[in-house]
Length: 379
Ligand SMILES: Cc1ncc(COP(=O)(O)O)c(C=O)c1O
Image 1 (cartoon, rainbow, N blue to C red):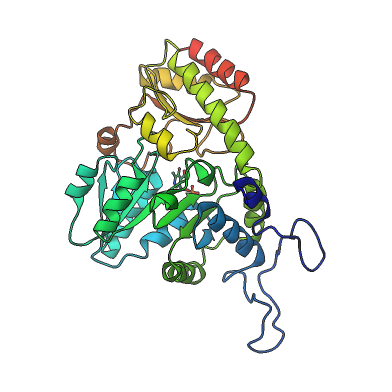
Image 2: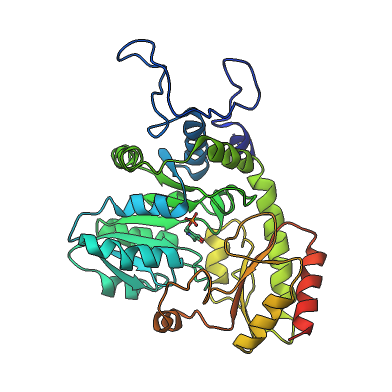
């Protein structure tokens, strides 16, 4: 079936007990056994529950994976993937990665004997230079948050295969509607479901999508042992959000393009970084591997104080962390999402103090541009 049909029906069959079209929220921590060693498939909600199982089936289908496991946040999902490594192993990570991934790896996981190199993964040459005998994984965010650098998924997956590395792709910024990394050879896809998959900013969540059954068993072992599986209510909310993913993403795409073009033509804006603009150095690559350019836009004003004036001046756009919801959110990466990155590293990867990131929502686009225009007038 098509993507929209799958988003609405896979994992979302009517409840067999009552016929309810929307399955209930199984708000229980434990399940009564019929007899010793005889359950109806569930025993304890940390281990599994029907809402989680349903959502995991949907996500695996939409990403084209064999299995999926959902967690309490994107970071919990990503942490479980790094736990596939063993002390002494090394991973190569996109350098302008989400700040939380930078913090998790450099401030926590290195204490457990893992090593990480942060590299511009859009350059195969640089990835090759970072390769060590102990390298086991390449972890790619494409486009990167917030610098919007696009990595060639087909090229990097060939490289990973040739060197027996696992390729992990964070697909948060686009969702499976706009990009399906497994089709390009990715081994594992991760998501912050908090963003487009949920789409309504009403719970956090994360997903790991696997292409190998054995690796899936390991992630499930981590999920049920460490206890970061997503709770019933949050699974329900995310499943509900996914049903409208395709229509939301179409509107995010058209609004994203319109806002990017508005900003690019505004005299107070120094630079706009959006893969849907021809000025983006990887516009053609993005057009090749993505079904659309999405709604994440990064732009620079002429100074940090100009950025502050704009952020203080918007009314419809909310100054907030996060992205991917129906409402437009605007943020200052250097002091918000990427504050955990030391200033010299931020500078090295191109995150400037005058940089603003906008997650364009699905409101009427004229209202979004009018709000930005009003706030820019104060700059
Ligand atoms: C690209 C990306 N990956 C992962 C995460 C982490 O997800 P969560 O906040 O759900 O833990 C984020 C959060 O902003 C993100 O933007």
